[in-house]
Image 1 (cartoon, rainbow, N blue to C red):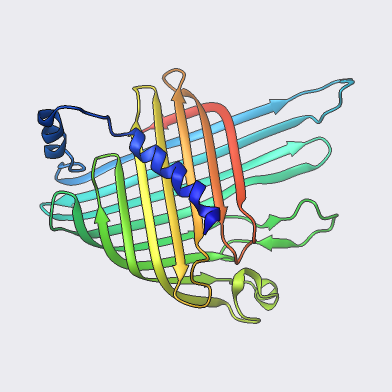
Image 2: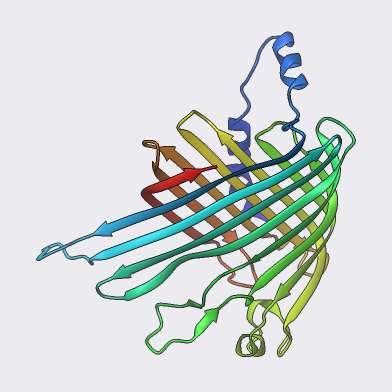
Length: 297
């Protein structure tokens, strides 16, 4: 569990950064009265599409190095519905990136598909009973590029795929932060590839294409325009099964920092910290920094 203290601490810092400290009682009361997320009735849509580029070009460079080109595409979109005390929040994240180097050729740098839906009924300004469905997989084959050619894929679309279904409570203290907590969640892990399933990849039994676990689940979302040019989008997922593996917490934290340089050009830093014991018994880290085109809607 100690592995995850720094992950949750990062998210907590991001969340608390969006709440300004106040000193007078009247100001505190005023904040409390406006702590509800968004009271716009009906549908509300928003999103961000971003493509970033990178390049390293060398010629007769004595210090050594490698010529590189990279490109990364990211779509982060939401469609939320509110009718009186009923709400339905939906989010879609699609990401894919490639890198080309003169020594290693073309490699995949990022690959993510995540569809999330939370709906429920508010019984107070900040709390609601809710249900969650979350689905995650990837688009293309993944490889261990440290292995020599010809290399076999180690992952692919629907191998793995994760489907989470949960019932619990949602806490929305502000328009920037929402937290879903569930003591009753079901996770399905799918490996729809015979070679990978026969090899017991991603924790499934040999020859099986799926594994189901009941456990506890937490999801937290933070989305805030810190200034008119700087925004932060962060999402945290945590799951631990009610089994002998209780306490081994599958954790995925995504943080996107977006700084607007001009109307369309932005600098972005996209960081992912991930720990899934069925994938790897080490913390995985992915970081992509780039300058490119961004369209917000």
